[in-house]
Length: 232
Image: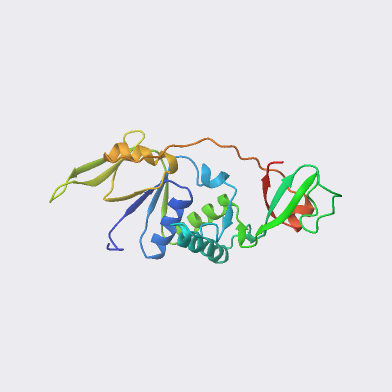
């Protein structure tokens, strides 16, 4: 790929799309991110941001877990991410204590009836997803990337020597067509749309879930823990 001539389009302004744009811009390219709404407007801005370095041990994604965790920590320093913090994770079982309830030495702000409280892992961390996603985009823009607010509705292709087809354009809502020879589709669950455009099955669909954000009390901010609750 010739960094001086090749234009890469990245469709989607979530954590994956902005990460790709950031690292392409560091290699001397000028990627164009196309986002139909705002940066980090979907799952990348609403997730819990919980990171666990060793929770993939023994699986095919073990190395990915570890590299990803370390990379988040490096990016926090590189991009000035204020919300990144290492914190231990506790396992909490609610319910009436079997004996006399002792005041826990960890997470002293945790109230209610607690049957059991124990350390689950210390190699964990948390980051605000929207902050790191926007920081990646801002850094990419400083490096020469561009951001286009538009919705991609399809692609244009043409036959390729030796068989198959190659990308020639991205169709935007409203009828505009961008000349494009290289594109990355990083649209989260909407990436299945790209499968329809390209004639490639992408077995992906969105699943609704609930995320609740509470205003933290001072004691929780001063003594941060991630909690995994076991049913009583």
